[in-house]
Amino acid sequence: MAELRLEKLSRRFKGGIEALSGVSFEVADREAVFLLGPSGAGKTTTLRLVAGLEVPTEGSIRIGGRDVTHWQPRQRNLAMVYDKHSLFPHLTVFDNLAYPLRNRKLPNAEIRSRVDTVAEMLQVGELLGRYPSQLSGGQMQRVAIGRALVRDADVYLFDEPISHLDAKLRARMRVEFKRLQRDFQATMLYVSHDQLEAMTMADRIVLINRGRIEQIAAPQQLFDCPETLFAATFVGEPAMNTFAAVLTEENGGFGLRVGSSRIELDHDWLTSGTAISPEADYVAGIRPQHITLAGADEAGENLVRGRVFAVETLGSRIVFDIEAEGTVVRILTTVDIGRRFPRQSGKPIAFRIAPEFLYLFDARTGHTVRHAQFAGREAKPTNSAAPGARRQ
Image (cartoon, rainbow, N blue to C red; front, side, top):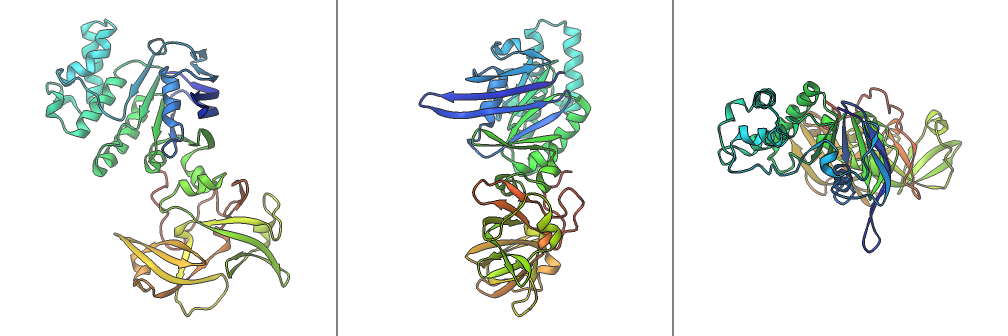
């Protein structure tokens, strides 16, 4: 295995289209790093550059300390798994797994040993005599992953290898992948647009948007301490609620004005971090599980009143969509709490925003100027357990 380093990597296509701009990050030896971002962010372009299938306009790629920027793909000692399994239909599972080893003209005894070892790890040992047409989708994808792992590669590249599987198989493959990475101790760069995959499987996440890196962090750090508005709203399910907000001073105290509502702020939150200015425009954010539902007739501080827009039941949890202050606010709560409140569209309802759970972003730059007070520490959610974005 070996470390992978990208330094100021850029890729421009004809017509001035910039797919990647100044991307730099490192994958340490035996680390699993995920490239996460929306479609068109530059994830697959980055992977193709590492694989040698594209040539960078600027920047360099180093594997094991060697500059491989202009090396041919076959010189880089990489293994790649695509989003579709692409097995040879006329070969058995054993022969598919053995194919890259036979190309290297390894002895038959070593080929058998490597294939048997990987087949056991991937739990496809009983399938070695079958053909791809006799396998399920999950089995075929495990074989495709095995064909990469059977090689003694420096770095393993994965291009959304489980995205085409059904939900149940994806959940199983996520568990198997994490076990595999632990047992195999491989250096892996994995492309995904699915945050659940990244949050549960990655050692670190490189969050990329429009060809530029937004943030590099461990999964929980990325969730708790996003550095930009994009990172805050992209990671987390349901997504973070955001509101246009203005910092105001009234009666000797500071608060955030959100439409006609006002959220009182405490002194510690105001004085921590980057200085903020009264009457400046900000974007306030809060996670759906950190908002407390309230009755329409309740009184008190930090209440926002609205009407039920829609309700989604998710087994043990419920998502309330509430129209308030010109937007729809999503609130995640438990079934036990949710059944106390009206679910019919149009019914009046209220919710309370606790200032310690607020994030604040510069409306012009999108950079974070305040994290929630619990960020980086263990939080006690108001309504329910934290969402599926937490690392397993």
